[in-house]
Image (cartoon, rainbow, N blue to C red; front, top):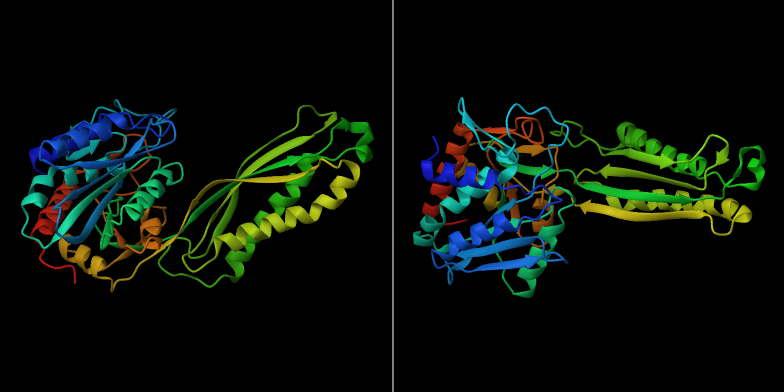
Amino acid sequence: MISAHALELAQTLVRMNTVSHHSNLELIHFIRDHLAKLGVKSRLTFNADKTKANLFATLGEGKSAGVILSGHTDTVPWDGQDWTMDPLSALVKEGNLYGRGSADMKAFIGIAVSHAEQFLNSEAPFAIHLAFSYDEEVGCFGVKELIADLRDASIKPLACIVGEPTSMIPAIAHKGVYRYKCCVRGKEAHSSLTPHSVNAIEMAARVVGRVRDMAEDFEKNEPRFEGFDVPFSTSSVGQFHGGIADNVVPRDAEFRYEFRDLPTANAAQMQSEVVAYAKSLEPAMKKVAPAAGFEFETICEIPSFLGSKDDPVTRLAQELSGEKGTTLVAFGTEAGLFKNAGISTVVCGPGSIQQAHQPDEYVSLEQLGRCEAFMQGLARTRTLG
């Protein structure tokens, strides 16, 4: 079972409202101040308007390059969900800790912070780094600033453990998440004069059809990556808006779509195919209205992640978690960004993604106890090799 101190810290973080469209500074400042009492300085990197921050702290200054414990501080909202309790209550009941972010992923952060003093006093030859980011849920934006800051400061951690909920089973791969918005400009006209117009909805629909064609091609022809629930890349359209009246040819339309690419696939090539097809439609549109055409905007680009069961950090996570095997996860994380920065990475944390983002989100105390044992073992580890 989890200790009272670790559970209290986890509950404290869950009670803070850090939904992505809110500030996370209450949480970041709480952790900063907690670490300062131990004599640990924190590096903060902010978003443009200084309403959100990442925190990076090193426990064991002067030691060799160490292990990052990584977590995101933001949560998804709970609007419209049928909760049976206050989502910020951090209620402990029937062996579970309830609340938004309990599984995804404030409990992991709380447990990591609760062991700061142990990490400081550890005889391990390497440091432990805490890396807590903002805006993961809306596109992994904060961690990009954090990683850039580490690069600029010549801080080169050896490995990273991302504490997303994997039921404490080390995960060595996940798909990427690439989302885009396409805005279509046509030319309006009375619907009795369609040859004098460019129908933005119809032009958008052609590109939507191409996204669907690509999805069917992935399913039929892409080499399988066994271990994923869906062992091929996917593409889908999530939103579509356009038109003002039945008898007005629409001038404007907008849709949003995404790719979830296998670690062995190329998301940039997928997007290039969509853009090239849209551009092929523009000459006919511009004959009627020179201003007509397509514009694309990137919403988020979260790279896929592919580690290895043979990586030292994976073997370390197996040893600390007591798990002999590894797994793959369907959801995106910050792991690919750390890996692309040259940091060997694994995903391993308490709870299940099946409870995350749901009404009455929870993580079991049994899982939190396993995570605490993981941290205690990390403090006793003598080598990463």
